[in-house]
Length: 151
Image 1 (tube, helix red, strand yellow):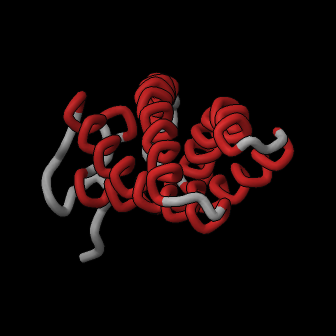
Image 2 (image 1 turned 180 degrees about the horizontal axis):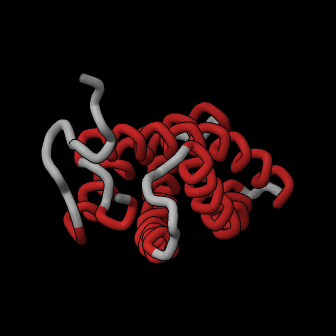
């Protein structure tokens, strides 16, 4: 029998613990990948790249908590339940667009580049993180079940 997204593989996880575990796992992976990406793209060392990765992560954590709270509030008001491909794409794009509004000026300042160069850098990150966000959320939902708002 195929696995249903509503039936978790590990355990059902709801409420604040769901958000805490989601954010912690997501950001741990994101810090490692973005530090490596910054090192590769800018030629900066591990410390310089690691610091900006950590700062970006803190910003992303705050945005993640706010965005997901608002998204689930919107989701509860929808007639159609579940997380379709279109809903998952909208979630990933909305999250990344809001984050870019803060990160582009930060990256420009940190690396001493123009806003245009920072936007190009952010676009590279954006492409990676759109896919990463989609895949991570899908795997997380299959491991821990959908939140009540999506059922």
